[in-house]
Image (tube, rainbow, N blue to C red; front, side, top):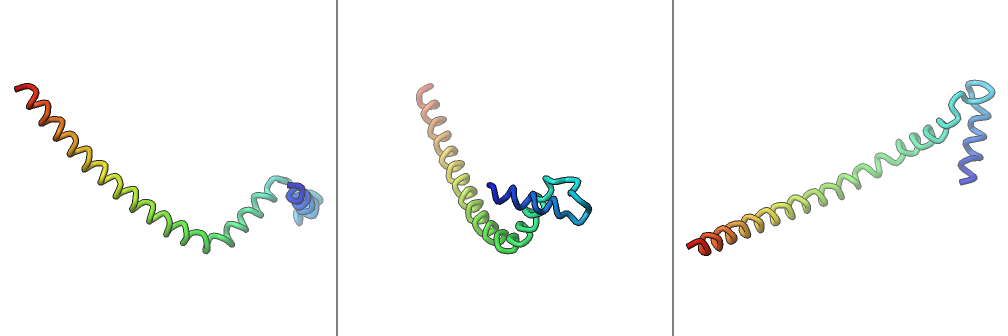
Length: 85
């Protein structure tokens, strides 16, 4: 954590806009944005691939639960009809 503070302090004190940057908190934001731009081409395809498999699994599980609920409801209706007669 201290290195972040020191890095931000050095960047804000040696700002090209003058003696001090007008927005010292932007240093971390800018460094984070640059890091995200560098990592995005690697991370996005991995997340896309994993997300697709998770979504497919969730949809399949939803279909199984729906079909099971439908079967359970039809059995319950049949038992209620048998109980009434």
